Length: 280
Image 1 (spheres, rainbow, N blue to C red):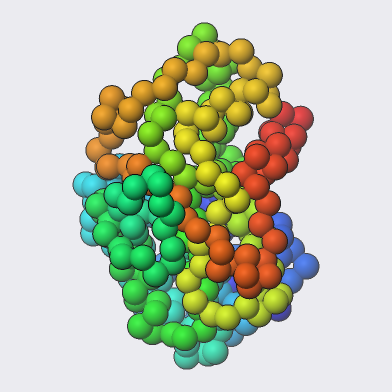
Image 2 (image 1 turned 90 degrees about the horizontal axis):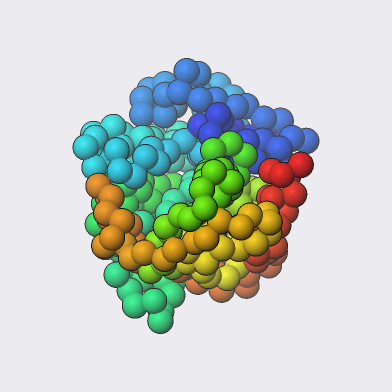
């Protein structure tokens, strides 16, 4: 397969490039391809005619986005729209990564979000990512949108930060009332790979590791597996205020992707594999 990977220097793209290394990869970042420029995107895609476009480009600075709607919208909304238009013209399959932030997180933590549940984003990041989803749906039929959450992988990420803090401090505070699924980039890349190999029906899928936890319990598990003795103290979201509101419920149902035949590991298994690499 000939695969165009956008946002190729990002954390997820590193795992995608490794997973698809036996395929013909065309890797671009903003220097080679500005996805917010339709004319440039159409010409690039027309010239290389990829079988698949995997869009790993995104504006993911959730707090910063609150002060820069224009740039966040360009990258998270206009970019996917341009890629969808170009993909449709040459018959490429578009793979796009979205987020639980499209829901807003107000659902009771007794419930889990399904793919078609009502969208109510409360942040610029969530609003622009939802616009990106809608733009893809309006411009091509051959697409996979994978909504993920709590992503970590090669490079700087939550797990690495917690390990660093845990080694430096005797005690740290971590939010305990936000619920979700930590997701390893290696496993998300594998989900994308399986979806393309199995040719599962096009559409929107929730794609996180299996199981749910809180940031507090996730941190405790990180320390346990990494043999770090630092004490973890729970705090509420209200005690840990950020410019952009964090969803209290980021839990997304995986029934659809599992029924399609995709194998998805648990977040505990994923963390163990990540730490084996990270702590080598």
